[in-house]
Length: 172
Image: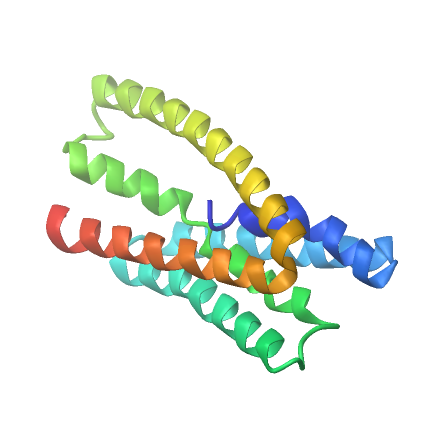
């Protein structure tokens, strides 16, 4: 949810503010590039530290967004602060947690099939999460503008960090 939140409203918001489709494309490309970079990091290392680090980026970015907008200094460039939240995409780590929590052996054919089926189900949940992100972010943006998005993103980032801290500390 936290990594899908910006993608759902950001392009339209940038075009509305700047009047430039090109700027919106560059912002979305940059955001998606951060998501890809996050996945690249996770191919090199998967553990709690990388998960906390990547997930904390959204916390910092949304906090900076709220501060900039509250101080009335970030109104024209606020969307650049949303770009690094793409680094909080941690689907590979979530799959790793799933394997660990269920005690699966990826070298086993039975467990490999089971994990594939569970990942398919998680993609369905991710789709539902994306729909929820679109609904929430568009409603919040319409009602509360950029500052509302900052608070929504910060709230989601805090909840995600609490959940991964719980999983990393107590379940693994």
